Length: 101
Image 1: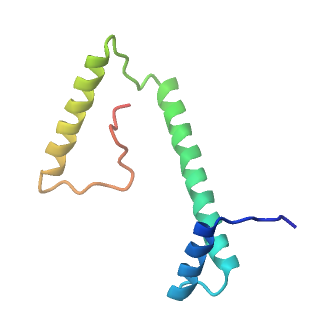
Image 2: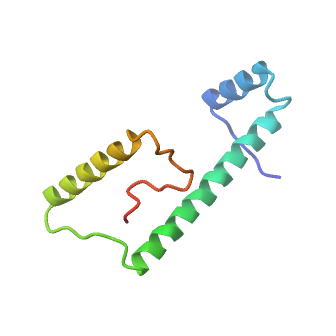
């Protein structure tokens, strides 16, 4: 069996979750936290794979100076803002930030 030591802050958080009635036991709180951690890990691995695929396919931008990077980021932000302000645009769940990379 794994021995788990919790800080006072973590114990208080678990107690708070139990008091809300959302969880029946401390084990349930820990399991829920581990599930979130697993999901975040899977999402991170998926995003890394997307980035690697984009790089292999040549979907990236290089910059000579840091100022050029800043200009590019600001242009992307303006472009995204323009698209979002268009009434007929409803962002899909698959849209990636800076979708050009």
